[in-house]
Length: 427
Image (cartoon, rainbow, N blue to C red; front, side, top):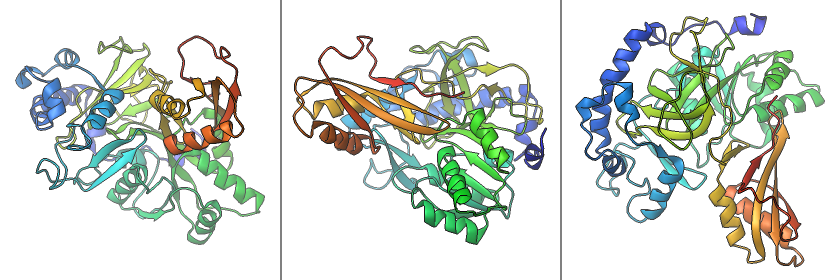
């Protein structure tokens, strides 16, 4: 274990992380009937679980017999019910104007758009566990560069950091020079955000001859974090660790000082299923990550993340006894995460729909070491002046991301059904 990993001492948030696997499994399964019952307070989940005997869902086999809800389905239900329920019937909390509900502290908008509630529990997304595994401690100053605008990323990290006694600087996204000045003036101990922005900040600091000796640890999420970038950060004195989390279900798994896959969070049940089905695959086989959250406020039962991973054998050398997964291994569908934002095939279709000249469109995502780039290749019946610029503006409007556009003749794109091609290098 190198010096950087030694600094991220394998402490634990609580005794849940080190209980016996048998005790954990018993507790998780014992909680399932109550979660199934609570889920019926959310109309969409009540419909999905119609006819299910909550008391009988007390084993992994019984859980695996329940339907999987995937993000595209959630999005379509939300779109269909915008006027009456922006959550599409999946939330058991809200505000006075939403089915007479209460209990939502905040509501967020993620790309799609998809709306997510934040409940009133402390550390609602359970991020504290990942922060502790990354070496964060009470009294640390955390520079948080996730967005505080629309999406929940920054609030997820902030609530976890405050739960363990950290102070947070709300850097948000962009304004690199101002954020770098804050790092110089405030001397943060730790960073939360995307790996790409941390790299940009460290590169700009080096160009300006600025040293950031206090910054020694980071919890990174929202993008791929390849070993090459992990090593690049380590060479500059920063130990970076991954948190695998989503706005829908919160923390799913997190990296530890052992650097051997990701340990599953204590507040969820994770299954790996064959893509397109709800059938669990044998341990070690790659499949889609499906998550059941043991929390009644946003009771997503068997939520399909669309991410691919696999279960690792054995236990974490840090003493954590929960199951481990290999980490993010791609997408089970064609959705891609670019610069921390999901881009859906339906968004590519929406871009094409807004321009009558466009026959087909294919989004190609390239880059390496967290430097993403998007190119939209479009077949068009004609190419009037300014079409590429107009399409690029539409992409930005729909996805909130910048994109180059290439106009091609009809028949130029491969006839393989792909709408989004992820051609990034994750080595």
